[in-house]
Each structure stands twice: as C-alpha cells, then as structure tokens.
Amino acid sequence: MSTGQHTNDSFNKLVIRAQVIIAASLLLLLPVANFFFPSAYGFKAGIHGVIAISALVVGTYLTHRAVPWLKGVQVNFESLRRWLLAATLLNLAGAISGNWIYMRYRGEDGPRDWILGNVPVFHTVLMEFKEFVSLFPFPLMLLATFMLYFYGLPIQTRRDLTRFVGVTVLVAWSFLLLGFVAGLVLAKLRFV
Image 1: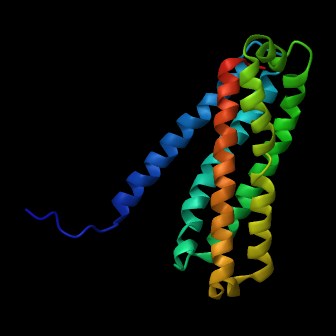
Image 2: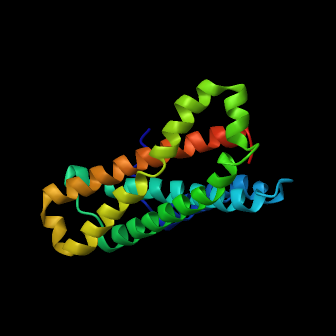
C-alpha cells in the first residue's frame, strides 16, 4: 500500500510551527524559574538563562539554514543574513549577561568556592573549559555576519566563501552547545 507523494501543505506547516512554538515555550520556562529562586542573583540568572536558551535555539535553527551552503545548495540569502545577525546579537547578549552573573560565581562563598571545596576536579576540567569555550561563538558568528553583509548577494556565486560561512556557523554552534551544556551542569550543581 503506497502512502503517496509527500506534500508540504499548509496543515503540515501549521503543525510544525505549533510544535516549534510549544517546544520553545517549554524550553524558555526552565530559566524563568530562576526569577523566583530565593537568591539575590535570581534575576541575573534568569536573564542569562533566557538569553542562553534563546541563543541556542536561534543558533540551532541558523545552523540548519547555513549547512546547505556546505553542499553548494542555494539558500534564501536575506533570511539567512537576518538569522545570522540575530544569532550574533543573542551571543553578544549571552556573553554580556554571562559576565554579569560570573561576578557572583567568582565572588566570596559563590559556586566556585563550593565547587573547589567539594569537587575540585570538576572545576579544573569543566569550568576552566567553559569559561573560554563560551566566548568563541560570538566572534565566529560576527565574522560570518560580516562576510554576508560585506559580500552581499554575490557571495552565493563564491562556493569557497559560502562553505567558509557554513563551516564557521557550524563550529560556532558546536562551541555554543558545549558552553550551554557546561552552564546547565553548573546551574544544576550549584545555583548562584
């Protein structure tokens, strides 16, 4: 029994968009709980959490939009450029809000002191790694954004540049994911 040819009708698009909205809403509810945590730093942690999750979601979607360039496939250039700019700005906001909450992490009786006292190997391996890897996505995405705005639409005829942008976005997303997971582990281990 044949299922027939798959068509991407408006109902399918509606279902997909509804799933994305529901999943993103549930994902964004995770850091919203930080706003109600009994800590003087709950607001800062909540802001950073919302920005970090938003950056990861937008970065993941952007990666799916940019990967076809690795294969030489044409993409909607203006849409890709807007998504890349949004991802770059979210990564900048994530770095700024991360440094804002980092003061509490390094502060007296902060999570860093607790981690060093209870699981020092964890801090040496994971947290030193996270402190650096979390900053990589912004300059990589800034470079890709600059290239798209500098070269404009003719960049699509340059396979070397489109591949470079695709690889840069993919590497930036990898660092973004690593930093996000390390941040989640830290938040689970010891809240600021």
